[in-house]
Amino acid sequence: MRKSITCPLVEIGQYFPGGLDIFISSASFEGRSLSVINNLDLKKIKLGLLACNVNNDYNLENLNSVLARYEESGSSCLPIATDSNDPIKTTDAFVQEFRNLESHAQRSVAIDITAFTRESLSILLRVIFAYLGENTPITYLYNPASGYGRDEKHWLSRGVSKVRSVIGYSGYIIPSRSNHLILLPGYEFERSAEIIANYEPNCLSLGIVPEEESFTQDFYTKQREFVEKVISYYSHGIVETFKFSAREIQSTKLAVLEVAKSRVDCNTIVIPMNSKPSVIGTSLACLSNRKIQMGYAKPVRYNIEDYSTPSENLVITEIVGH
Image (cartoon, rainbow, N blue to C red):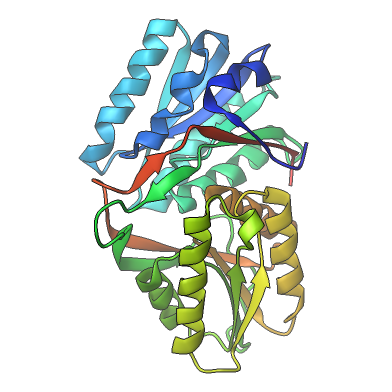
């Protein structure tokens, strides 16, 4: 399976009738971090790996809720302490757990990608392929939001504390070359503007999600407004647009690889800021073309009160390796 399947969350069990060897998820402040886990039969999971960004206390309530569900089911769950302030600690935490799994024969792997930060999700994928093998079949599960930013200003995050390359995705950067920035935006203008200012690209490729590839009409409309704002803000001539998918991992991977080929004379930096499936697609593109660097802009603050509203659907995509 490379194309995604969309089904009601309550039907997730029928896609894993034999259970799972490894199920990986992340506990965050979002209610969506519980959407998949609350609909899985945890008794059929041999090993759960549960990531949580422990430097934010507001994640701990959902962390404890998930750990309690595993304990009730009798299944094993190993918590992984990630750190959004220190990606080296996050990488080390993932490596420590997957190093122990290296000699095992487990190959039934599913990841609930919904509630990871984009940076930690990309790092996780890099570690999985390093320790379980580059041809590991992985089933990606995603609970799309039915809405974002429910308060009157519709904000998701504020400020940018740092823009950095993602560990494991350093690319091949030659200081004397021009920079080609590939940006896959959502509709957080402040973070995107900070990213563009940080890299000062000579050319900017700005991704657009077609209406049929977006999760809702509202998301499509807001992203179009955002893209038009960026184009009007930056000097004409450096900005080009391309299409990518918010839901289809393989489609986004191919789109990023194609755009990267358009400027082989430049350093290529890509930053995914849209849905988590598009983050996976971007990560797979970088793993296929190691010359591409992936970047991440860490926000100062999230809208933890009204970040997102869970939907009742699940997007499932199975891909072998990268």
